[in-house]
Image (cartoon, rainbow, N blue to C red; front, side, top):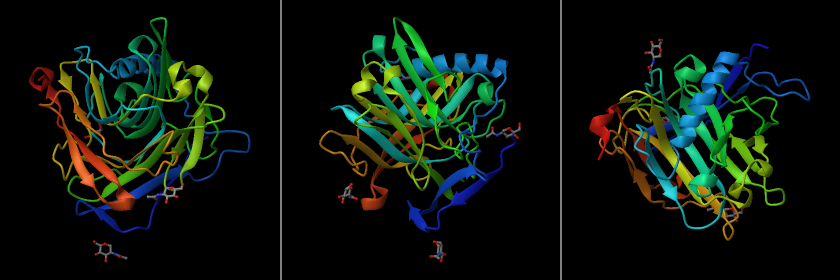
Length: 316
Ligand SMILES: *[C@@H]1O[C@H](CO)[C@@H](O)[C@H](O)[C@H]1NC(C)=O
Ligand SMILES: *[C@@H]1O[C@H](CO)[C@@H](O)[C@H](O)[C@H]1NC(C)=O
Ligand SMILES: *[C@@H]1O[C@H](CO)[C@@H](O)[C@H](O)[C@H]1NC(C)=O
């Protein structure tokens, strides 16, 4: 079926940092027939490229920088065992060419490098994968077993169980935010179901469940996460690294994650807003920082992004 989307926007007229902000909620105009879910058709060749891109994406997320050109600017929390993470992520359309990707994500991680497990949700510009430079909703899951990385983007392998008949992964998120103008954001969350250990994906203004990752596909993530990260993630197979966020690196006009929220044992509800330490790699090309607490609704937010450029210029 050729999908038609209806972008729904909330009616709030809020401003953050003096800029108008609107939550977007793109969904299919017509639900898939009962018992079926929307899955984007991809070619065999795209699947092969997706696999290569997936490996880079997981490699780039190891807690140690392996010297590759990947960059990350995130807020990170590592203190206890987490069972959920959420945030409002501004939607933008960074320039990322062939061999590069640029993503804004919430990342849920567990285990030492030899058992590294990860779930990541957000949006990404990835021409190798999508054959276009649009901003698309995506997920990733990965699990290292015996030195091999298992997993994939979206539903390109078994793992993620898609259950929602009107929210496809891979869909284009628009409109995108305008630097110094109207800001659009998407509400995303992942929480772990206590009874099954499964991780559930929540999307959009109304917090609809999209699907879940069964706990059995993970090792350490079965019992919760030890690292949560929010922010920008880029990679490149060339000495040029792409834009991160919206390309701007200033506190007011760059990309944001707002209402950073997480859950752990003694804080079971996801509405908890927290102050999280900021971590930046490749500081000369990307920046991130505290955008301060903005009250009960907007919570704790931080900014991140940058122009990218020649990787030799980026390293500390
Ligand atoms: C929405 O915000 C704009 C700009 O801040 C303002 O001009 C307009 O009156 C507001 N509309 C409503 C319905 O509050
Ligand atoms: C995306 O691709 C189109 C068509 O090739 C181009 O006109 C546009 O500038 C590109 N956008 C970005 C952000 O790179
Ligand atoms: C968070 O959620 C709990 C219940 O789920 C509620 O009692 C509490 O008031 C909420 N806190 C805030 C700051 O919204």
